[in-house]
Image (cartoon, rainbow, N blue to C red; front, side, top):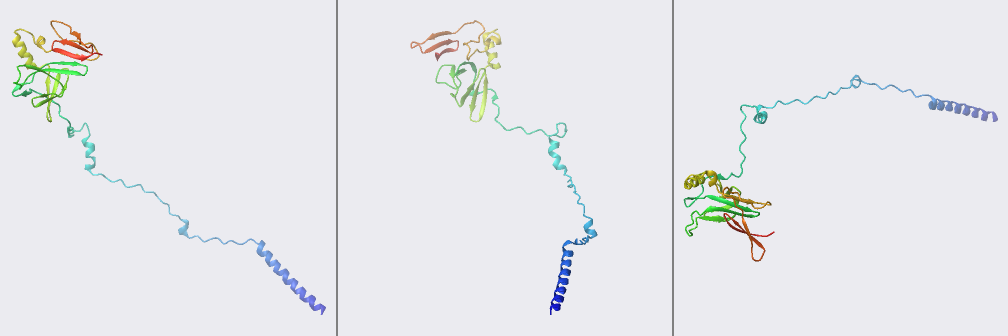
Length: 232
């Protein structure tokens, strides 16, 4: 009875040892790695080549703007004139058939007056009249008074009347009988921040300045008339 137990235990012990040996081999033996098969197609990877974009050939019309702006091109066309406000015309301005003549201009600070003839006005006997900016002369309006000219407008039309009119100077020289054109030219009085000065040939004179009764205004006696302005 005892011998059988030992025999069974011995067989079980041998079986256990064999199992342990197999387990040891599995744990400590390096696992054999089989090389992965690579196909020839995968080994040779395709090399990507970047292609430069194809340059398109432009037509001749695309370069027309360059040709037009070429300063040395014989076929270069002139630029069209810019549309803007037309310059005032210098011409004989007539009212009721009578020419407008500018005899003189007075400019003192903001005070501006122009001495012209009295065209088209048969109500008064005065041959000359003083006008200021914005005043109406027949169908014309005095838009601007400058040192040597006045600007008249009639709707969209503008006219310049020059102070030194050659026709007027020749008429004055003819009436004076030997008087030079230079002496017959009209006088201009223009003052700003500087003292009042009279542009005159012969004889020379200075303006007479008087003070009003209330002491607030001064009256200047000029060759073209009396001017009243507020004292500073």
